Length: 119
Image (spheres, rainbow, N blue to C red):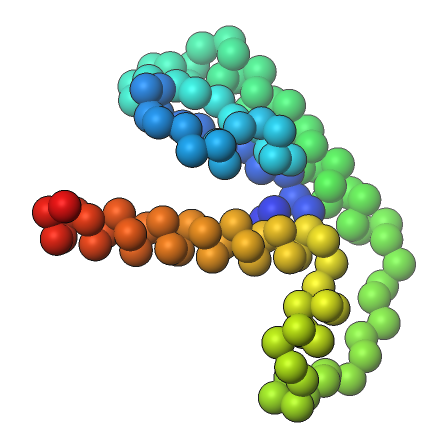
C-alpha cells in the first residue's frame, strides 16, 4: 500500500533466500540482504540505509504537507463500469501495484497448495 501511495520503501530480505526478481532495488524500493541476526541491524550498511530511508520518508511527508488540498469528486458507481473501464482509469503505478499484488497472492496460494499437497 505504501508503494501505491508513492511512499519510500525499505525491504530487509533474509540472506540466501531465492530471489524471484521482485526483491531487487530497481523496483522503486531499497533492498537490504541480511542474515537473520538482530545484531546485523546495528552494522554500518544497515544503519546507513535506514538513515537514508528515514530522510526520504521525512521529505515525502514534508512535500505532502505543502501540497495543495485535493478536490474530491463525487464517487462513481463502479457497478455500472466494465473491468476494462476501471483498469483504464488506474495510474501506471496503481496498475503495477495491482498486478504485483495479484502475482504475490497467486504465488502464495501456489506455495501453500504445494506445501499442503506435498508436491
